[in-house]
Image 1 (cartoon, rainbow, N blue to C red):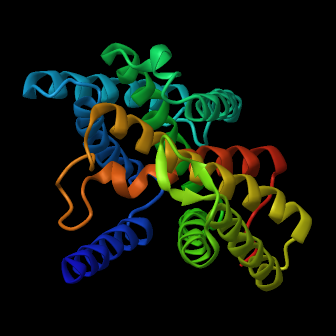
Image 2 (cartoon, one colour):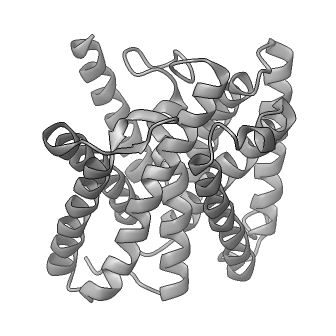
Length: 280
């Protein structure tokens, strides 16, 4: 199993880096869109819509929304550049959703009365999947955009790795017992410390203002944990261990990008609001 997980992880990394650096900002959205649509296929199943036709309809629905967002962003017109007011408004809505998601996770299982119906879970999927695409596309369009996407992935990885080792060594108090019994407050803090170190290193090597950079890194790190918890909550409610089986040894696409779904919109909004750019 470990060998299978490692091989899959290596292949995923190669594909991701090839798409990130090999595709132009104009074509990278197609790659992210494909990943999001696979995620939509899996989310439909988590929403008790397991029939093939139901999942296909949901994938088509998410695809139509992505096209609409693409048009609203100005990517489907001959004009150059993104419509930043629209991007900002959509990112604010996305981050507001994740603030609400925190309350849902904290209130589980009682909160399931608010979102447990299949149609409401399908709506939740729109709020999880579409902003992920929007955020990554916006970030990729920035100067040094490919490296900014790498930065998001690094923040998510630091929170995950730091949380894992700190949790194993010091973990005692449960972070969200009803949602993910394995996560602890000590692990959560370990991930945060890892990202404080990561932020300081990025500030040092890029010459950025460390206070401004940490104001971007810390919220992104915190929300990455929320993304993981939300998917765990939905999977627990659906009674499944993994979102899918497409990735040998890893489960589904959503199992690998759950943290990213919350981290990316927060990072993108912070970059847009602050005007910060990576100086490398």
